[in-house]
Length: 108
Figure 1 (cartoon, rainbow, N blue to C red):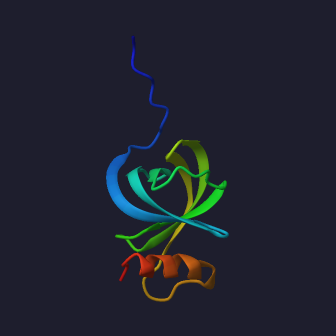
Figure 2 (cartoon, rainbow, N blue to C red; figure 1 turned 180 degrees about the vertical axis):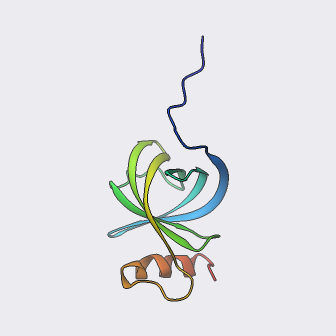
């Protein structure tokens, strides 16, 4: 039996980084399992269905990543990156909820 073919074009790197996933009226803790320039793979703290558009707050890096959920299987999800902004210093008003979540999670 041959192993499944990896369809990704970008190299992935392991992350094991704490994160918070946000959407309108929605906030859940997660771990970023791996990342590439084009996407992320997450493991959610609970088995909840994610909305299609989310913001992932990387606690250690202090960034908010706008993303689209491409697939979800149980507590794991694959996301396509759409954009990224720093939460350090002055952040755009649209990222106020992301900045507050980052601060509650211990971001500095």
